[in-house]
Image 1 (cartoon, each protein chain N blue to C red):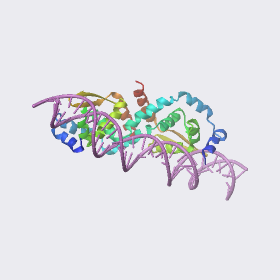
Image 2: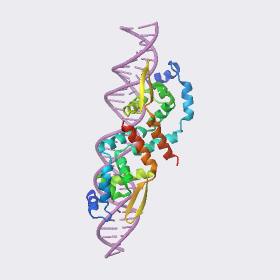
Image 3: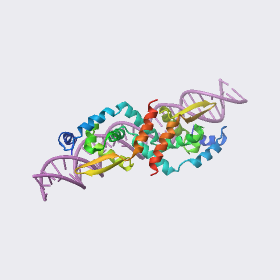
Image 4: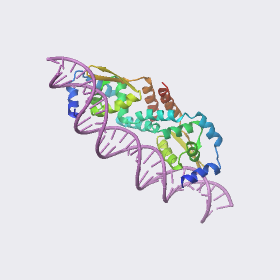
Length: 121
Length: 121
DNA sequence: TCAACATATGAGCAACTGTTCATATGTTCA
DNA sequence: TGAACATATGAACAGTTGCTCATATGTTGA
């Protein structure tokens, strides 16, 4: 079946939900918001980054400690921290030669907690 | 700087957080759970799937309606529905020729709501 | 200022992902 | 049973992603 046949379906198949569809389109967030939302969840969608967040959930840490704790390269950690930083999931401050990272706010643990709840069923 | 220099850091650098690290390792969920968690969030980490979930948030729908609503190929939708199904984020039932999909439980909207809250700041 | 330490970053590569296309499976009705 | 409709699925391909390696930037103390 091709795409065109599918389009045809919209017109002729027996359960047209056109009312529901247009109704739903009103509440649907705009594309930008949906994209941002997906970008946010993408951060949680990698076990390395989840592990980093769990590490920071326990206590703030410098890059070096994160790398050692998770048995990862300093470079790999740094690359991932950049992504988490851009998503505003973590904050950081410089302290001497080290840079200390910590979770940005409670949303991080809320989101992970919700996810964990779904997993444990 | 090479990996080995980084490892060296664990031993010699001035802020050894060894206590914190071992403490944290106790509360750290095991690798399997972390992996599953990442897999779950991966589902939310694609704007197509987010859009599908929003569509189903409004009302249950057959594949065809989802495809038309989101202006996607039937095949593309079906592939993504399979992923959401495997993550138990959606349920389905057959009704005649159609297959009706709906959100599996409240976790989906909880998780998305938490994410949206983080975005809107 | 220079050496040592700590972190950040760009390039390159292998693995993964989402879409399309073609086709298979499943369902209804005549 | 066969035609039409609805959905599912495998292969292929392009785009993305996370890691490694090499190197750059930033900081401290002598």
